[in-house]
Length: 71
Image 1 (cartoon, one colour):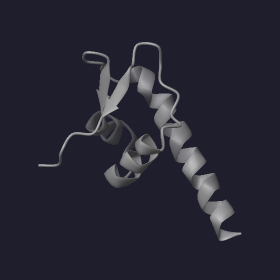
Image 2 (cartoon, helix red, strand yellow):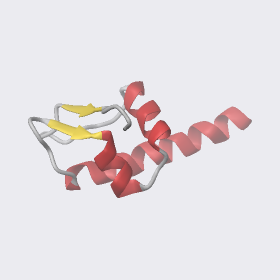
Image 3 (spheres, rainbow, N blue to C red):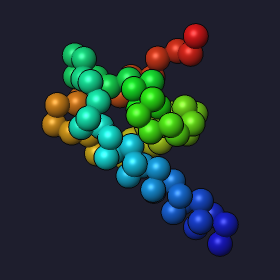
Image 4 (cartoon, helix red, strand yellow):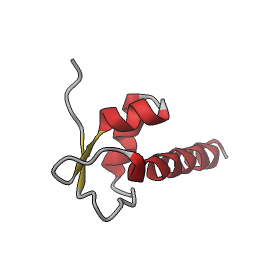
């Protein structure tokens, strides 16, 4: 049961990220994880996990999401 609840939340987070992607600046076909983090306020590590799952639907103008190193 706990796994089902976690998957439900993860799906909501994924949807939240997908909703903001069209609003974010695209540079050379890429959006940065930092841009997603600033817009959504979701934890950076969670965003990276969701990006790495490879299930995000990207807008037509976006080819990839860049995970830049933390400073």
